[in-house]
Image 1: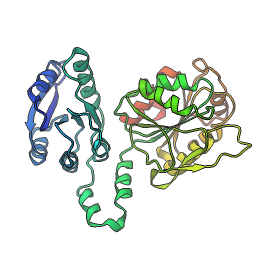
Image 2: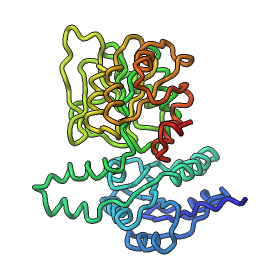
Image 3: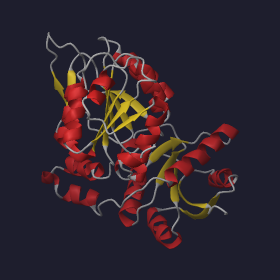
Length: 355
């Protein structure tokens, strides 16, 4: 059976090598460029007329108009959007994602590796389910500043997250996290929060290392951070962090008698309280019992719970406590966890159907 081609619409905002991109895409016999547009009204019209599988927005310079193009298209018709920058300034990247784009990438030229990466990115994004954004969201926010425009946008974006992932780990955790994050794509549509037991002062180095090996953006979590899809938040050990309303992180001072820092239980419990059935807890290798109570809270409030199995754990401790408590939906080896998380995010499968 012949596989249907991926239909690509290119919207060009001032990037000169448009024809080069078309040739680069169509080297892959499963990809066809079906149309081109130069402004957002034309793009919205062509999306409805040609029904492409994905839209690639190429940008020659940073401009507010680029954000409005993403917003207009996503308010008109849901379609996976990949923003490709031909410049290095990342000033507007968060705005593109907030208004509906699935990924923002730098053009890497036409080398074999860059071409293969581009084809892989297109194929991956086509499989992501997207929904229309609220029409007029930006204009409504501008006209009604008393309504709290920032939180309105955050709430709109949150409704599109399949879930919020909270990870608990300790001994052996950094290596497990490295393998897990490397297996997740840059377009992973959920925020990821990680409580890894670590000595004071070492979190920043771990963040830099994990960020260097993952396509996801890894950052050190801070008070008042607003959660975003595709971001990985590493909690610092100097204090505890929890999720509060409007998807913001809040700090809790560490007490002298706290054995574990940062606290896995406090993070997991807060995610359960805020997101309930859209909370997913994952407990990995680690010594002690921290995280068990938090996983139980997610389980009780209708969320999903996963645990790393004994065979792939450096220390079968934290995860064993949770498994023995019978609050884990699925026990999986480390190499299968990313596939399970992607299945839950993109395919909506229940835990019984996970790989």
